[in-house]
Length: 68
Image 1 (tube, rainbow, N blue to C red):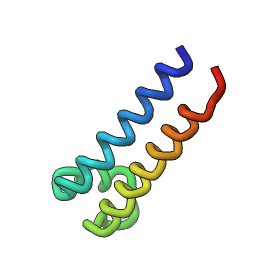
Image 2: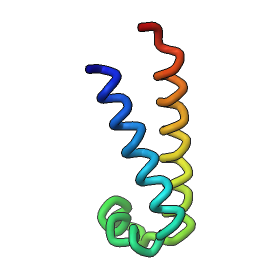
Image 3: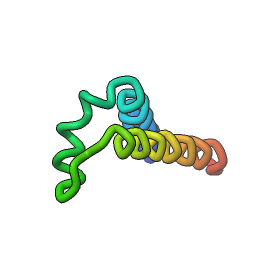
Image 4: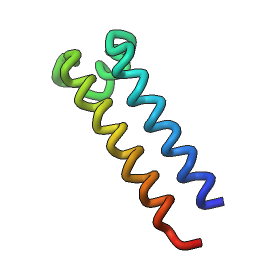
């Protein structure tokens, strides 16, 4: 069950990262809420999406190296 939760988090990070790289303008309203005092720019959205992809890769490596 622990593995299933980790897989779902990995999929969520991948979906968020890829969608932000393909459609950064569609994610601008979400970033208006998340980055409240500053206006969201496409550079900030792109940076956060790369970070989400990095988190997905790190979690995937953790999933592969964890003994069962």
